[in-house]
Image (tube, rainbow, N blue to C red; front, side, top):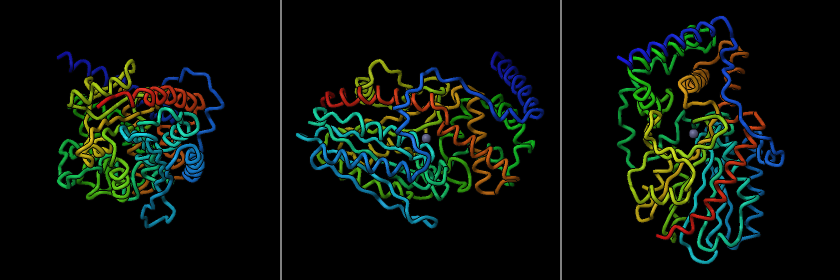
Length: 416
Ligand SMILES: [Zn+2]
């Protein structure tokens, strides 16, 4: 009964907000928390505004690392495309200088447009954190722009509309799996007409979603939407029908690089989930107690979101777990970093984030009712994955630097 009243209150609040939405277009400017941070201009040098510019900086900094460490390799993997013949995943591999024990893999841009921040973090690591001593037993593989199409054309998904972080699996049975919770929400998530933000479906999206939350609970809904689906190629969170070119290309690189190492620690960089201006440590749920303990030993006082709360959800076909699967004889530690942007841990933030994705996907497939609506939708998407706030960007680098210093110091000490 208590649950029912809670839901009722949520609906009433959202109804008021929905009506505000009808009367005021500004509803779409829903403002998340301010970032409490003083901008450090030096930290902004790592941010560029296009895929090409990010790639160029990454290559240039990688080349500097080659001069510093013996046998460092920097190269690119061409990704096949019908649209663009200049899409590459770039990487920089610094081998352990004395004994290969621990490999640290840091990947960016599996969700295309999230790669701008991921690239900035990788650039900072290359520019600031390459202390020679730390590389005696530890190697580092930086993978830049796992989804170059999405990064270049400002989408989260690949050229085939595939979410690469739902696509990464060794078991093809996943592509035949059915997410029945998703099917129930299909119409809400995937409207099939030109997008207009004035369409009642959009103006009342939040109310419609809140009703669904009241019926099914936020937890069930979050799981159904975010888990990944393999039935609707034009839909949100589509995980594909086979391994996507990017994942195919990067698999042998990871296997070959890992060869002589015992432990492989993967950190996959994302933006968009969680409290604005906070770096969340958010792995897919981990069962293995030893793996958990070793990850804790690296991060120590940092809060890790192990997924015990209401915001808990599991995803299928995710990349950091995939690395463990393609390296069955290695000790694999998976971790995901999420730089929060829209307060998606709150109900309003989560609905706003979801709505941004719905209209972007709809616009991509069915077009926009006007150029103005297209601009609004694109800028909302960018704010969600690559905030323009200089405070936000500067804090992302401060937080990442602090954590990576810690990782580089502590990870080689994890004896296995
Ligand atoms: Zn992501």
